[in-house]
Length: 366
Image (cartoon, rainbow, N blue to C red; front, top):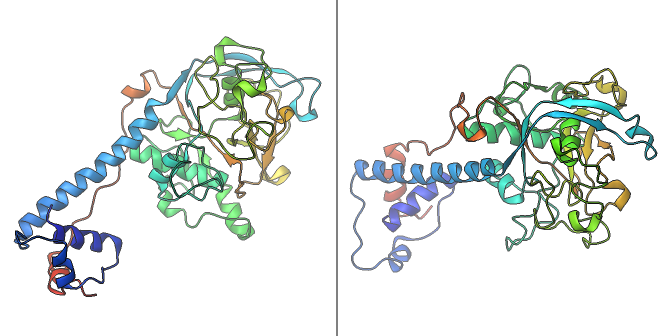
């Protein structure tokens, strides 16, 4: 692509113009510089850029999809006796089949989907790109799920005020946001029949940690030896580590214990014993005002990274050790063969000819 035309296009998309003079630009270009010729040529090059942009979107969505592991549904013993009070009583729960990511959402994936990454454990050299993302609130996580769903051509799961389009939801509440803003976002609903990405229910999370239909009785996910499967307070150096660098469980899932806490869909409450099929605690938010998080983190002691340990936080909280992983409801077809009900957004908008002409005629001196 012609260098000057590249600068013109980049200037337009970034919303800022380079302070290069015409002569300074010419220093970068040899005598065989070909002048900007026609709107048709611009159109062709915009099409190329659009294809590249869409290609990158397809790449990240394909990478994430390839990491989804099938968890065949079944019945298991949920909870634990003799530990924390909120883990009991042990009760039978049945979950339907679902797909779950083999790793927690990484910084690279999060940034590719949302264009931002506020992780505390982030390094500018990119060495932490494969570490799990953190400093993510529950609200952030559901926005990520919906946008990834659209990017991947799946139907989004979450809706607010009847809309699954996150661009209509307004600003994401933070700790200092008004009670009214938080109340609105706390009314988010989930369509479990949709084929898009979502947070696991607490029951799905524990079922996967206990290796699904394998029904293992390990203390941790895939082992009784915490250090072999988890990054926690004794071996992490208080920093997150590359996702998937410990031993996987029998389902092929990594970091179900440690590295970062993982948000679940449910509101926090005592177990509802009558709910035995696909339970998802949807209690009155006024009772606790907190969402479930599971698995422990790099800052947790062994007792808090056990499979059954339960914890919770207000959904607006961003924590240095708080992240998530995604799941999808299983359909009759495979995940790779799922139909698409929502077209992926993306691509580069058409540039008005007058803006291109103005940019070039100004000699990039703006």
